[in-house]
Image (cartoon, rainbow, N blue to C red):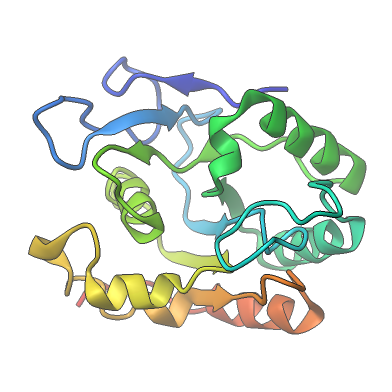
Length: 206
């Protein structure tokens, strides 16, 4: 099963991003949610360094292969089932149909619902924080709780306002919702507890 992708402004339900070439934060693609039901609680997740080991921080699959590990998927499922969070993929895997198919197959085997939501791909070399923020800005204000799990230090990206200097200070509490994994290990039981706690914290704009 492939994630439905659509052009912004086509009238599909859920977040829609300005795809005008003149906009510096324009999205090239955005996932079309399966329904118009607003998302209140979201877990933004990476794949490499989270659901299996990577070849470095922010890197790709390790030399042992890019198979998603059942143990890590079980940890992800535990977070979803205990918090009620919806999943939004931020990994570069979302840009490759074959890898998206791998994710859907792995999710099905792990007892997870099919993946529906992915972060937008932004032009001009925007970073992970900027992509997450673009998704949040397009959510229509329905988001109340969120967490981010990644082997990248997304919290530091938020603090520095990378990719969006004009509004870099708007999300001063962003780091409280970020869990950074060890790229050599991925999700752990401790990560699960961290994410469960992060998803209890209301998101407040400063």
